[in-house]
Length: 463
Image (cartoon, rainbow, N blue to C red; front, side, top):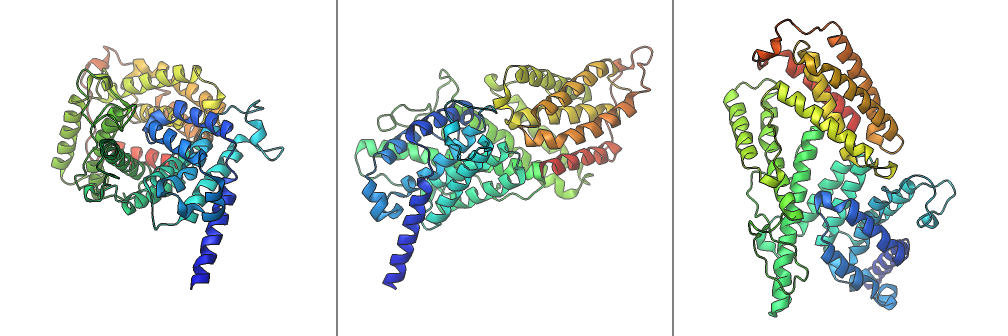
């Protein structure tokens, strides 16, 4: 029995060593990590930079003998999973590099025809392998974050279904280390004030990670039409919207005042609130496309209006969607913003899936309105057709770098043909019928079945 345990320990140690050897030199790692924090982390606020910097300093100060003789089991659980997080972060950062030669990072490639995407996938798989070597006996918070960054990496790569599976795995790891239960919150290392304060901040980090996982769980369930992994009916404890500390060992957790600027956590909490509003919509889908009890629909509508009214000033948009015309105007505004954003970036950022979803969703909604109601809003038609053309051109330009854009091109062409067919005989009626109140579609109107068709097209693209 002792020999068997010794053999397992030796095998895990050697496998762990072989994987961490694949990490690039510290100078490259630090440059790629900087890219990640600058270009990616702000979107979800998944990695706390002050914690990461502390762990990186600890990692690079480890004596070689610890890794060579004792192996990962000699390290604290968070530190032993740290290389997995680094692999996922640098893999994501590599996706942001432009195609073609790079004077700094080309030396990381080990084959002549290798691309940065190939290298990124290698690094990401190495991160997954490290978590596999460590097993599930002592899952750490760092391992959970590594799983989340892996899911985001897959989504950036256009592998949305795989990202759904990855986020499910991260959720189970989070449950394993008790992120969902306050009774499993960690205790301070000692009674020293510094340790107590650091522990308070760690508890807040755990709660933040959990609501990020919940937001992704609900969102991917909506996008892919899959079940959620988390029981969202339970009221989980949310993190406090506290300003990010420079030194958590010296600052207590205090709620952000109205005079403090919004922080990344402020945005994370608002995203969580808006995403959780989708739970009721998921419940409505159980009744099919034509709900029998429209009181439920009215309640969802009312709750969404109340949520919109509570939007903080720094997140508020000007015009809420109150009609098909407002939805059409919002779609056009989104396409204008997407066109301006696209003009301000270069090929290295074409992988950002916001470029895909922001344009694709707006185009499909805009086209659906004209296809189903071709005699309405005709004064917007020339602008809509022009933006549709520009959107297809952007997708064509991005197709080599963005797999979702490449897959969506044929869908957009089909929608464009349908749109042209619907509006080719449309003429603006005399007296401007647009001044008349638009008749909203009945619950069993064809709008629902046709919008379902477009939704299914979106899901086919994503899968």
